[in-house]
Amino acid sequence: MGWFSSLGTRASGGPKTLPGTAESHHSLGLAALLEGLAGAGKMQVLDLGSAVGSNVDYLARYGCKLYIEDLYAAISARGAANPGESRLSPSFLAESLAFSPDTRFDAVLAWDLFNYLERQELAALAMYLAPFCRPGALLLALISIGKQMPQQPMRFRIIDPDTLAYEQQSKAERPCPRFSLYDLSEQMRGFRLSRSFLMRHGIQEYLFQRLPD
Amino acid sequence: MAWKRDDAPSPEPAPTVRPTPPPPLEQRPPNRGLATIGPSIFVKGDLQGEEDLVIEGKVEGKVDLKKNHLTIGAAGRVRADIFGKVVIIEGEVDGNVFAQEQAILRKSGAVRGNITSPRVILEDGSRFRGSIDMEPKAEAKEAPVRPQNAPARSETSADAKHTPPPAAANRPVA
Image 1 (cartoon, rainbow over the protein chains, first blue to last red):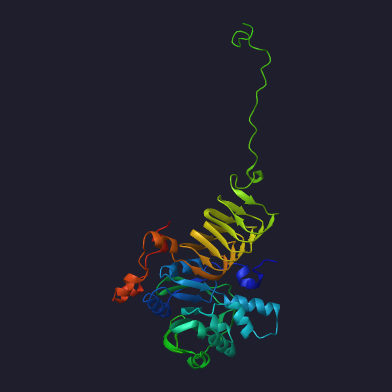
Image 2: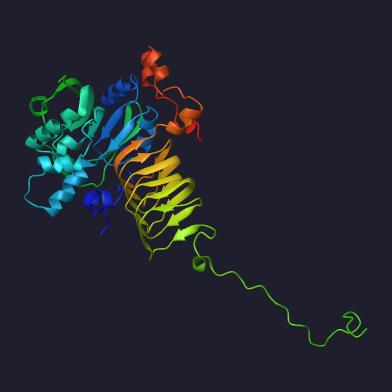
C-alpha cells in the first residue's frame, strides 16, 4: 500500500476531468482576495482544495508560502476507513491540518468545500482554523445555491485574477445544502462576512474575514 | 612479397569483426552514466554525494545532493528529507524537499511534506500535501532581490493591484 493511500480516491486517482466539463466563470471573490494579497509582504495562503499546478504557479507570483491540504480527500479517506465516526473530530482536524502553532494564514481558499460539510462540521472547521489565521485574514468560499451540485468538490484553476475555471470530477450530482448567509454566519465563529457576490452561474461567493482576537 | 595483399589476394577473406549491435532500448541499463539505486534496493541511512542520482528503490534516510540533479523515479520511495540542485519526483516522497534551483513533481509523483525551492512545478495529477515555499533565499544573498510585492504596494491604481507580479520564471536562478 502506498504512503499516499490515505489521500483517498480523489487524490490517488489523479485528475479525472472529463472533456467538456471545465467551464470558466467570473469570480469577484477571488479578485477581492487577490487584491488583498497584493497589498502586503510575504503571505501565507492555505488551499483546502486539491493541488493544481497552475494555481501554485500563479500564487507564487505574489511571493506566497502556499499550504495545500485537500481536506475533502482526507475526509473521504477517513470515512472509508472508519465508517460511522465523526468526520471532523478535533483529532482528525489536528492530524489533517497539522500546522505549526505559529502559523498564521493571510488567506484561505476553501473553494466549494463548505457545500460538502454539515453545519456542525463547518463550525468545527472554522473553530479549528481561526487561531491559525491572522486577524483580517480572508477566506474565500463558493456556495452553491442550486438544487443540485456535483457529487464531489470541483477543481478550481485560477485563469486570471478574476476568472476561475471549474473542473468537474464526474457528472454525478447530489442535493445541495444551499447554505444561507445566516447558516454560514452562525457557523463561522471567529470570522465575519466581509463581502459576498452572487454570480450568474448559481454560485454565491463569500469572502469572510478573521475577526481580531 | 608474399604478404602483399594487393599482389596476392586471399581466396578466403579474412574474418572481419563486426560491431555488436546495441541492445534494444528497453534492455539497456537505465540512465547510463548516472548513479542509480535500483528498484530492488532498500537503503536505510543517509545518502550523500557529488553526482546525479536516480532512485528507483526505497530509501529511508536523508538524501543530500545539493549540487546535483536528483530524480525519484516512478518506482522510487523516499521517506526522508531530500536536498538537490534540481529535484524531479516521479515516485513518492514522505519528507521535505529542498531544491536549490527547481523542484518538479511529475503527474505520477506524490509528496507529503514541504517543498522549498525558487521554482516549483506541480504537474496536473500529482499528489501533494504540505507547503510550498518559493522564496529565492539563496539568490537573495548574491543579488538582493526586491520583495515581489514591493512595487505593487506603492501603486495606487486598482488595476495595479489586480496585476500579479512577474512570473516566477523571471526570477534569477543561481
